Image (cartoon, rainbow, N blue to C red; front, top):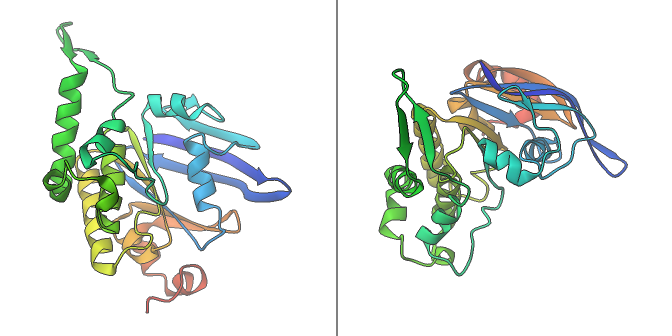
Length: 253
């Protein structure tokens, strides 16, 4: 079932049409990738979902609700949380404080079971459970929880950015260029952790230039060129398409 639907999306930057009527679906519990070169419209698309970039026309539906051009804080409140390109770590705060900033919108949860009994989970309990989950994915962050976030390496800061997004307990996690500027060994680690996050039931939409690592973990992928979808399909099938890879994703070597 599609948790996110993008219908005929058009986005302009002044006189430039950056996204030209694209259609995408993201099924619940899956990893979906948006791939392409610089200027393809990848980041513009993902930022329109989180409300940071305004849409010219078309619709974005989340859980069947039209969220097109809603304010970013309202979209985040619905359960769409973005780990931004460039990480945007909050300098002057510790690792743990950065993580806790990601939980600012969480509220006490009320659920009703099959017998009609109401169960209440306090906000503080939810935060502690999410914090332990993040430390499970990224043990280095637990070791350095009291350290100034600005002193972390690039790879550790990327882990922190993803962890901070997870602290918002997202229904849909948006990852914008998580491998940008990282060494190959660290990139492999990051993608392995993204797979683990999906295995725990999260839905992930990832924008990436590193097509090969992404297609290895993606259930489905869309390839953009100059604001249009030029190909789409299951990640493993796209990875085997040599002509497609050479045309739009660059050589493997």
